[in-house]
Every structure is written in structure tokens, then in C-alpha cells.
Length: 396
Image 1 (tube, rainbow, N blue to C red):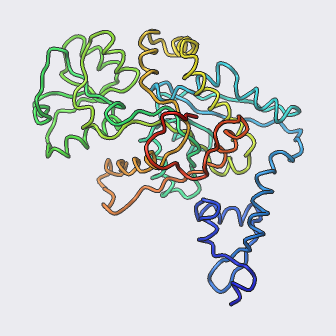
Image 2: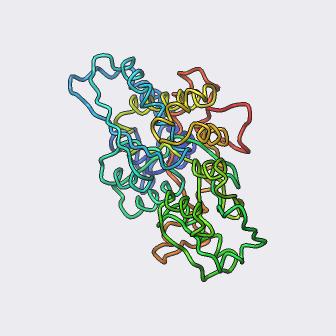
Image 3: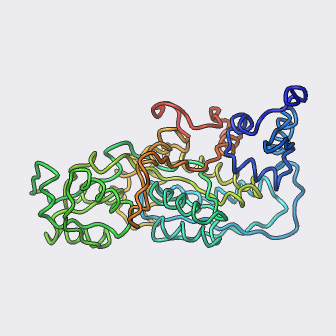
């Protein structure tokens, strides 16, 4: 056959070979001149040409001549959760600027930092094209994926993980220390405070529905107000996350219950506009190198990290030290991290629940993180999500 005669492979084989999605292959064909041939209605590729092209693509960032034009990069971050604090280290120690000076010594690249109140604001900024890179939580990632299905021109791509918490440690339902509840059903009679249309509220509603509780007393208020209300005895329960969990425990304001029932653990992620990252691969890798440096500093020099976090967030140093010690600072993407995203269905707020068979296939590209790790002489990272449980010995 013609296919065998000319050493052609099908597009599905190329996707598996390079570990990328169909949409990425299509964009590479359109914008990056990935060589292909159409036979009838099917698209085929010369295997040797594909590998040659891919090697050249990987080397492009080293051979791109410096541009005289100034560029700018807007990075979004939030202090809403400890898991998302690695950008604070990058910003304070100018880790990204150091990388950019090394790879583009003749360019002036303006780094703009956009501080948002939460991950949802960062997603809005990315949709509007105002933010190119951002760090936010798993629920915001699920929302961005859902939006990309409605707006094809919006293409968020997952690049790396931020802080991670295992099952039962990402969120907690906090009640006064004197209150004892034996079962979740007892919550039906209590007013529960949570932030409006957030990760916390989603997990709360899903937990209550899973226990056949369809009537409840949910009060929408900020987490800061919830802490003060708990302190004054004006509410009976509130959904919280780090560093607020550590704060209420440290100050003996409340205790956590039903943590495991609030769903899977909590992850933060580094996400980029895919079109931007394809056009600025050197900047993407530079940021991920800074991200890896930040994680290492948090793990190995926690006291230095605590100083930065305390100055930026206003939380007591003891609370921050306790909070960051509970979190796994590991940029590697595991298949388990991606599978966890099937827990979320942001359309539930719209009354349009996804079908049970549907899977949330988050768009990701681990190649940039793999290159960043290689340049920092870290253990090799595969180009696909790592299998099995989180490795205890190797963190990125």
C-alpha cells in the first residue's frame, strides 16, 4: 500500500509518538509547518520527517535571533490559597528576570504581575487575553476547560503543578471546638458559610448531595468574615482551605470535620494561553525554570519562604510555616492529578450536569517542564503524566 511504501504514519500515531492532542497537531500543521500529506480524507505523516521537524522545533528557541522590539508578559497570581504561592517567590527574588537575562540578553522584556482576588478572576483575565500565564486551583482549571469548549479561540494549556494536598487535606469543614457532630446529616439544621460559586461551595454542595441532603442553610460570605463569625459564635460551620485552616487551628478558633467527605485533595496548576506559549517557547520554559527554583526554595529554605509569604499576605509566620509544611511542592504532573479533574462539573451551577460517561480531558503540554527540568539537571521527566502514586523521593 501507499502508506507502507512511503513510510507514512497516521495522525493518531503521531499524537501517540509526540504525546500531544489532535488540536495541537492541527495547529502545528497550520502555524508551524509540520509536514503532512492528505490521502483521501485521512492525514498521514512521514515518520522521519516528523522526528526531524520535532527536533528542530525543540532547538528553535536557542537559534531565534534577538528581536529589537520590546515585549511584555503578564503573569497572574493570587494569594487566596497557600497552594498558589510559588509566584510570590518568583516575583520577590526576580527568578524569571534572571532566566530571561540569560537567554535574551539583548532584549527588554517587561514582566507585569497581575494580582487577583481568586482563580476565577485569573481565568477571566486569560479569556480576555490580558494574562498569558497564571497559577490557580483545580476548580478554576475545570472552569477554564469548560469555557474553552464554548469559546474555541480560548485555549488554556496546563504546563505544571503547583502546591498539592492529598485526599482529606485540601479542604476542611471548620466548626467551633465545642461542637460535636456524629454524621453529615446533622449539618442540615446548621447554617454553613462558604464563598460564592467557588471551589469550596462546589465541594460542599457535592458532599451534601452525595448524602441525599437536598435542603440546607448555606450562607455566602468571605472566608475572613466566616472566621470572625466562628470566633464570635455567629455561625456553626464554614468550608475553609489553607492557610485559613492552619490559622483557625493555630488560634484555636475551630476544628476540622468531614475533611475526606469534601472530595479529593487540592491542587494548584500553572496554566498558559496555548497560542502564546507556542509563539514564546523560550519564555515559557524560562518561567517554568523559575517555578522549579521557587518550589525548591520553599522545600529547602522554608524560613526564607515564610518571610516572603508573611510580608505579602499578612498571615502570622507560625501559621504560614504550618501551612506550607502540609503541602507537597511538586511541579510534576501525575495521571492521578488529571483524573481528579473528573470530580468537577462547573456546569452544575447552570443546571446542566455533564453525562456520567463524559471525561474532562484537560489540555496539557509537559514538554516545556521536561526541558526546564533537564536544564536544571533534575531527574528526567517523561513527556506524559507520571503513573502511580506521588513519589516520595523525587519532587520538582
